[in-house]
Each structure stands twice: as structure tokens, then as C-alpha cells.
Length: 233
Image 1 (tube, rainbow, N blue to C red):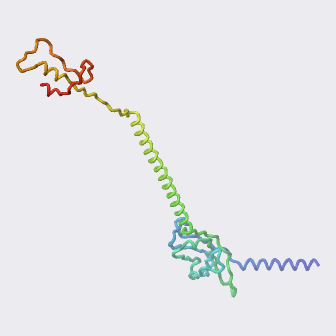
Image 2 (image 1 turned 30 degrees about the vertical axis):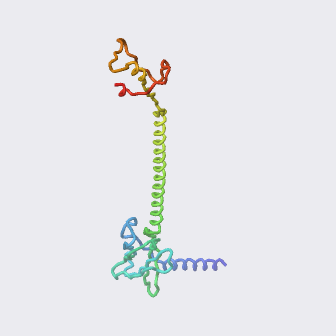
Image 3 (image 1 turned 60 degrees about the vertical axis):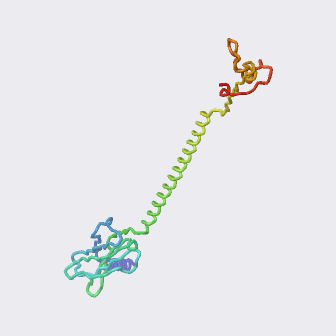
């Protein structure tokens, strides 16, 4: 029984060693350009480098959300690295990329462990358009509010000017009264004077002559005759 357990343990160790040998060391992946400088329409270079002992290996470029390799190419027989090109990238090319390589060990094809992840973020209309619309909406709302405030201020100013004008007219207005003047018409006992004169040769006694009296005089008993100053000359 103990010998059987030892045999099983030995088999597990051998299987583990073979499994470890079936995987080559992981390669190194990196971007040839800075990730923050990537824009829509640019071309991106992703380099994948295997250990120096694995010359002429096949390399695959993969993305985490895609099952099959995006690109595959073989390194020259005297090199252990390749460069993958992504041309005219868009927002749909954003994601996490990695690479791996294969080499032939005798008659078996050995695949390496996956490389480190390389994140690519391509800005596009997916985020730019909503941001632009939000900014435009905010600016439009601010302009509308400004127009409303200015309109209210102008209207209030006009009303204030109108009230000031009405108040000014009320304070400086005078009651319109009709000024009537009594036009005194001077009359005199013209008939009596003429009678007193008599004929043209009659002389009047010296002394003050009779003054003309107004129409409102009550000293004359008889109805006077109206005359103007021109008639008395």
C-alpha cells in the first residue's frame, strides 16, 4: 500500500513537470507611443518581445474581449520580437491587449504564457458628443436666463421712469382757472352835456367839467348812453 502511494506521487510530479515544460516564459508587451497621445485616426504600434533564446517564433496579438487572435506574424530567424500595427484606430479599438508566442520543441508546438496587459483608450464621439451637447445646453440655458433678467430690468426701468414722469406732472401742475376781466365800459351823460352846451355860441361856466361815470355808477338817474373814448374826443 505505501509503495502504491509513492508511485502515484511520482506520477503527479512528472505530470506537473511536463505541464510546466509545455509553457514557455511570458513575453513583454508595450506601446511604442504614449497612451495619452492616442487620438482617433492614429496608428498604434504594439511591440511583443520574447526571451532572447526563442528566435524566429510565431507571435499572436489578442484582446481580452475577443477569443481569436487579432494578428499573427513570425519573427525573423535571428530576432525574438515583432511589432503589431493598428492603423486608423477608433473608439471601438479601445481595450486591453496582450500577446503570446509559439515555438517548436522537437515535434510539439509549445505556447508561451500570456504577456502583460496593454491598455489602449481611444477617445471618440462616444464621449465627446454628449459632453459637447451638455456644454452647449448649459451655455444656452445661461443665455436664456440672462435675457430674462435683462428684459425684467429694462421693463422695471421703464416703469420707474414713467412713474417719475407722472409724479413730476402731479407736483408741478397748477389748477387751470379762467381769469376773467371786467371790461369797464365808461359812459357819460353825453346827452345832458350836449344839451348844456346849447348852441355853438354858448359858453360853459368856468369850473371843473363833469367827469365821465362808469356803467355801474348809481348817481345818474336816467339811463345813460354808451359811448367810447373815441366818440368823446
